[in-house]
Amino acid sequence: MAPQSISSIAAVNGDSATTNGDVATVQTDVVIVGAGPAGASLACFLSSYGIKGIIVDLNSTSADTPRAHITSMAAMECLRDIGLDVVADKLATKGDCMMHTRWAHSMAGREYARIYSWGNDPRRKGEYERASPCAPVDLPQTLLEPELVRYATLNGFQIRWNTEYLSFEQDADGVTAHVRDNITKVTYAVKAKYLFGADGARSKIMTQLDIPLEKHPGGGPAINVLVKADLSHLVKHRMGNLHWIMQPDREHPEFGWMSIVRMVKPWHEWMFILFPSPGSDLSRRPSKEEYLGRVKELIGDDTPAEILRVNVWNINEIVAETYSKDRVYCLGDAVHRHPPFNGLGSNTCIQDAFNLAWKIAYVMQNKAGPEILSTYSQERQPVGKSIVKRANDGFRDHAHIWNAIGITLPTLAERKALLSELATNSQVGRTSRKKLQEAIAQSEHEFHGLGIEMNQVYASSAIQADQDPSLKQTLENSDVVLYHIPSTIPGRRLPHVWLNTAVPSGLVSTIDLAGKGGFTLFTGIGGEAWKPAAAKISEQLGVPIRVYSIGFDQDYEDPYFDWMRVREIEDSGCVLCRPDRFVGWRTKAVAENAEDALGKVLKAILSK
Image (cartoon, rainbow, N blue to C red; front, top):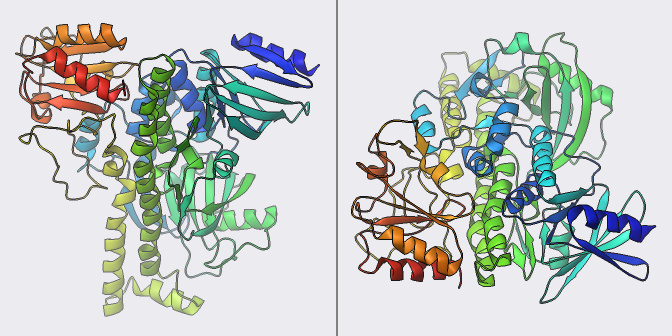
């Protein structure tokens, strides 16, 4: 019976199955453990290259709680490469719903402060619009994951729910993963070229690889309480998707010191993220009635509420020292674990997958040497380390707001006194108000952290650094977390610029000209030699290279002169963009022998 069921898996996937005694072995291209944002998006990106595989997941379905929700422009650009940004945009909440983050006594009660968020600050809207053809959206994980799985399974992948990963072994030719179907209790093996560990913060694969983790003391436990409650009457004049609720003038249960009330679906589904009192270990789990009582206190009026689900999680500050070993590659929460501040979680998972997918596909299709795979960890681990720190710094920054409002004081009397002082013309009142204002302003690093989202810089053999000292090597940025300064420096993401044709036919982004499984070369007037050079090198290496000339009477016009401002090269030079839309190389002016120059660079990038 087991061999028959396993054979059916292989048959549907176009793979093969064999049996060895009582153990069946399925053969496929790749196997992914975990169907969350990291694993499912990796399957999507790999499938766009024609790679097939199997996803195994311990759960019986996609995410049943909306853990991640903010989807950044950087992640949307990755999804845009395969057309999934359109689906994501339709499912997402955007616009006014994301306008503010607020601090208040309750959802119905007085407001302490608010700040514009996610590109809605009038002073910063232009920055966001100039940075990407995409916009940030609020897309709960419960809606995103099924679409990723659907795309993957319609394009070459199968998913095996209720299937537990057990162990793996690998050799020079591939990896064999041992898994167990937890419904039939059948254990079988999946043999593939590569194994991907996207199995979350308790990753068995990372444990078996014995990769060291850089750990810092965590921030303790937190509780997600998913609530059904129609709060539309409360948000009409206090629009926003994040609401910090603090009640320093009241006694609070140990499990619910304060809360972030997060919109899931406007305006009837909410996540109440409860933070226990400092030092609490939640040794006693509250009852559903206790949770509901606290939720109603945080809402602040008699709105009916129903608890749908409760989950406890820990605030971590952990990053792996490396992301891979031999033929096993890990991504997502398996290698970087942090709280949700700055909305960096699923976004970083998707970008991990986008970086890895083209390299795996190119190696499997003999377009690149296997050495290129080492650049995945070289490029993404520093990004993971930076976002883990930023997310935890964002959490720590909130302590200044708590102190200003008084919720951190030890006694109820002290908390009441400081809260009342905020409204007085006293030295304490003036000092507290100033501290509150400064702390709220600092939180812009979380709610308008465009730089931490878009400023990634890669350094590896798959990036060919500038050799011309006249080219700009560094960028002056007053705050690398807050601000994104576009650049064509190798290792930076391709700048988004709107282009058009001479007879206007609709704007086209440089982002949409690049990617889609191939390299893209941008040049201009005088750079005609790059086109035949690219055609010849493309044929020699078997790698797609598209070439676009930008400028007056060229393939595309630069109507706002934005490309001229950001390209940092002369008209005849070129910017070479990798399949993941990161700049791999540039040269100031056309080379004397363009074919030799381009061929040498591409061979270096591709480890050929």
